[in-house]
Length: 380
Image (cartoon, rainbow, N blue to C red; front, side, top):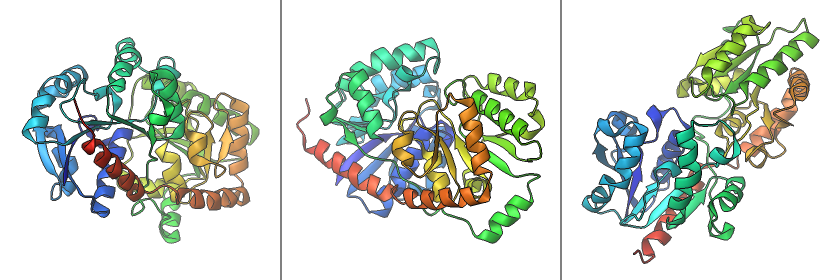
């Protein structure tokens, strides 16, 4: 059985896209009974996040002093080498390109989720932008196997990293089908009854400018001005991130401030009802490497209004109302369109069919094959 060391130190308390990827992959590997022994190499403070997999996986803890980003990168480039030898790893899987190891002592499989450092100005601070653009590209060229979560990201990696496009493996993310499915109608009705008004939902961390909250606020204001009798609210679900203070300031300055609410991080257990209870999930991001929230929303029977940028068009296909995320009047038009019940039902049916394409079990099967191929390759 292949022994795969999975680096988990970038899950950020379980509140990140990489965390969703790691958790979904582990679920899929368990369900298909993959012929691999996973060794979870993670920060000790994160161990409770992985308890449900520890009956099947081994745990290899890392001291909390290595949590800060710069220290964590240093640990990966130094101490991880000895750790891989001590746990007898056949393959190393790095699920976030910022932790790629230079000349790892065993074959290295890397997942690249996006090339946001190249695509979105001001996405990160200067140091992270330089690291993402200059250092990571060189590290990635030394990886044995590189997979991306979308064809759009594979195209970006080939362009920005200088890697051959045909050497990149595209493996879509999945959806947790046990969780993300249409709730019972009575549950949805009761949830909506507890809300003061119908709502549009944007689920993404509060990050400016990349997640485009400010333009969505402007679009909502235009929608509200055109339809003064409408009672809809605009809800932002997500933890504060880089630039969140600008989003909060824009909400406070809005003439619709009483109808725009930042919910903070929404607990995973509550997400299906938030999705199913919404008039529509609005996802106007300026760039995504995949975009799990629109797929999850569709799986819960929620109509989706979605940006065309990055991989989002690839993920939602023709099952979402597409918008140019920089076209504020166009986004206002989409809000008005989805406020009509008949239009919502048509998009709901399309979304449910599209969501069936995303399956963590299938992701796990493809990743297992990549582990097996990597393990068989000669490694210098």
